[in-house]
Length: 199
Figure 1 (cartoon, rainbow, N blue to C red):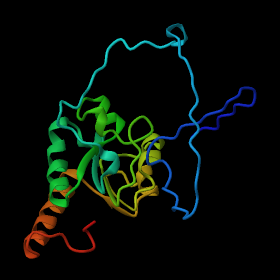
Figure 2 (figure 1 turned 180 degrees about the vertical axis):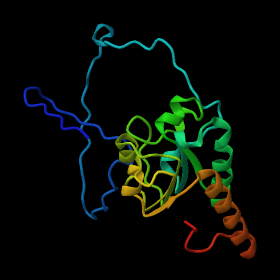
Figure 3 (figure 1 turned 90 degrees about the horizontal axis):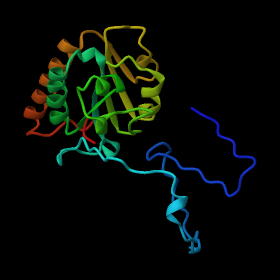
Figure 4 (figure 1 turned 135 degrees about the vertical axis):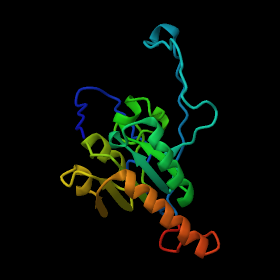
């Protein structure tokens, strides 16, 4: 999303958010040396000050970045109460619920569940986008998912450009039907998901 140049200053340093890049393969025999440097930081060198720390976790939230199945909702869900159906589907699949920035900004989900440039970058095996149009800021946070299933009533929604499977339709009809189907499949298999859905 950005090119950063530091051609006049040394030393140079860059940081990368978790899950932005795939983990490289381990190279046997490769070694390194840890060099410990002494540095005395003076209080006057610190140019930032923490005024207040606010947590939205309430002691019971989870980190979506490592989840293998994520069911995410966006503005198309039209209200906080409608995320209940996503929680139900996620529970049946053994996954977690995420959200787009617009859903978080509306107060429907905590920031810790936000997927995208200003939220978490995720790489689940299955990502189900429900009522998410697919702004570029959201796409950069989930486009490397193994399988993307998009549900949106707008056939021109950008989310369909990265979707493995796209369903054009009403999320309020499709998600409950999908949940019911998954539940039925699990009942037929003694509580287990079919192999092609299990992660």
